[in-house]
Image 1 (tube, rainbow, N blue to C red):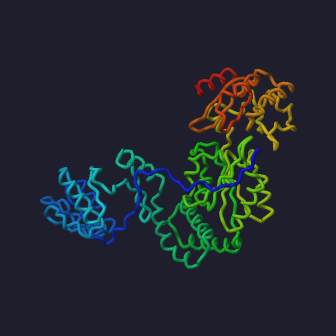
Image 2 (tube, rainbow, N blue to C red):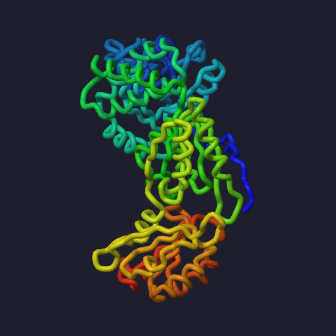
Length: 483
């Protein structure tokens, strides 16, 4: 097995964007709106709510804006009872046109760009520099959703879902964050402690059933003082289970850890979809191990955890599946404990659970499988472990899951059958469990090893063995799903 050095992940941390979402400061700035009608009135109300000095050019239909001009939600609304002219756009921070005529829309867009201001022409994306999304308003907390004009109704449906997830009291918590921030900044804390404060703030905001009170402020700052005393520049390590691959199987606690990480040390088997949920600014280091292939030395990984946490960083050690199941978590825990580094373990959905769920299989059954056992298919030397309990593995009342068995399954079969395991015992190989490229291969333990060559040569593989379902039904289900 060749040695591999930990290596930084390439700089790109985000997939291509159709548009770049920005939040535009308009308070007191000149904004021009040309056009009339219900849509234009709504745009005018939205712009005024952002504090703009809004100039509306609505021709003979300026009366449509009279009520808004008399009582705007913020800012000012000035209605001009004439059509727009290119000179009206001079000095504007933003120009919005609700113009049905194609030539008028094109001229408006050209005038706005000549004046150096971004342009939006309603329902005419070819003339737009910027677009309006669906808004969830908990100002100063604002969520904007865009489908780049592809499906506005879809965006509105997503907005409704987010509205339901974000209680109205979050508005007052966002206001409290703005009010309390100067006191946090005045302490001139290192980044890790500042982030810890705001993580605590966020947890309290979501868990509290009330608007923020002085007692919340007192408790949060008391917690910050304890952190200052306890941590004294020492960082922390989180051993996080990434699950078998499907990002939807991540726990909420795992997502919170990923979004608060300074550095992420991750394995080859962690999917790109999981990494997409991590904090953008976090540095990423690939420290992967591949079965019978190039691998980082565990001692190097241990040393990196200690060194980086010793610099005051929050280090997330991201492992496929559950960190406590064949993830060498024990060795990393020992290294951190010896260095006095605090460690949190955040469990994940195991590959066995993910594979069984995808197959519609129960790993246990009162009649057929009263015990569940996980074993590894290779030891430190890459061979089948010499100290497996073959009597236990031959137990017909147990479900056995073998991790990383590609090179050793034939020998496993030989020894298990010699110990009394029935050759007719169902055995299902699952490659890339829960991922879009998942492949299942159903057979019996007697015939499965020779069929592993039917699977792609790379990818995480495990084998489930046992009578936890009616064998014929289990094999039929697996064959149907893999077809």
